[in-house]
Length: 204
Image 1: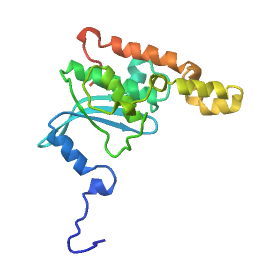
Image 2: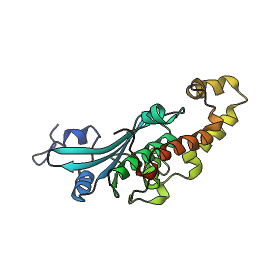
Image 3: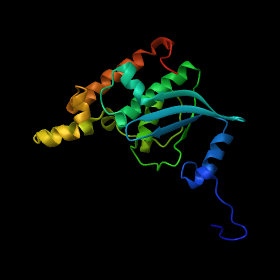
Image 4: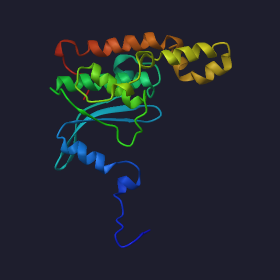
């Protein structure tokens, strides 16, 4: 509904809460590739995107499902450890394409310390890309490895019914949530090993 003669209807994606156009303009003007992290309840996507006159072009993309299909990830695809590994995978892919620097684009996400978006950003940093960021927002190593999840699983172990219900996805994939940190390190090693020596990238 119009509010006066000077009122202008916001762009559709702004009305839908999908795009902050002021922030996007600043990112585009920088001329640098954007690191875009988006997540759902079950998965995380990390992409490196550059603005072109005809529209955005995706230079590199990684999805948490790749961790399952190619690197043996058996835990949840949308948690902080998965976000970190997906960011690491995207960063390593970006390095194989000669990319060295990206600027973070968190969209309309609140910059909450330790959130998945910052876990993914930490993965990209660890892959060797230069990403300007507030390091205080990055999750600590224990959270990245899923030690908090492992500790919670141990606290529930006395209640078999609640434990089985809460961690059904883990148990279905034959991975104990208490051993998530060890499983995380195995998958991280697999991801890094796939790109050692500047070898061929796996996936697009």
